[in-house]
Length: 261
Image (cartoon, rainbow, N blue to C red):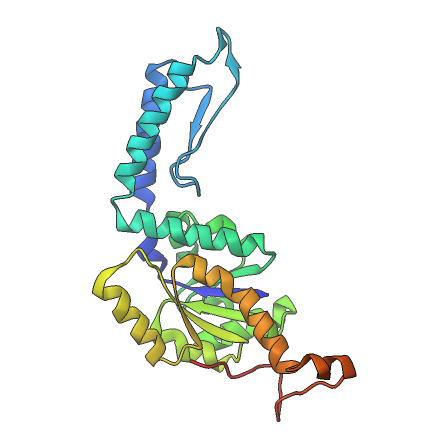
């Protein structure tokens, strides 16, 4: 499927935390004289896995040294996880990684400029998941609406509305997404937000008539398979009809379906 994501990426900016975390771990490895043998990335899905060669000039890495680095790394992870932005960004990246792993084509979309979206994705450490498939309103010659961008993406990708899912965390943009007539519009709420704000956003997305609302990145990851199964049931509602080769299409079927809220 083609999955277009319109998210508030500024809410997932972890630039400062990641830079600080990497600098902290680098300083520790430098003091131990191991800066050429260890690499830390506090923005990775595993939140700071380090890669160390099996040996160095003086022989194999001492097990006590490795344990020390792991303790320092775990301490830093616990500190980072106190930040809502960091944990929310981590959840988003797990979602993007799962969707890409399922073979779906991911596209980032915004009502703003493409260059600004690219900068936001970099700060959220999510740019690599989109492989330069980033679109703002300046992606069309006349700087048209969000709906026009969705239509342009579907046309250029060769993947029609029937195989497109739009994910948005902004209730104000749900109607623009629905006007593009994708297979489904999923309202997404990052579960790390928590509390009253989570319920408030979920209700807002439902009120805006999103076809579905999903709390948590893993819920969004499950929707493509669920929707494809749901579509199969609509197109061929009974096993008996399938065996006879008779397809039960809804009246005025145009490749899209109205999904229940």
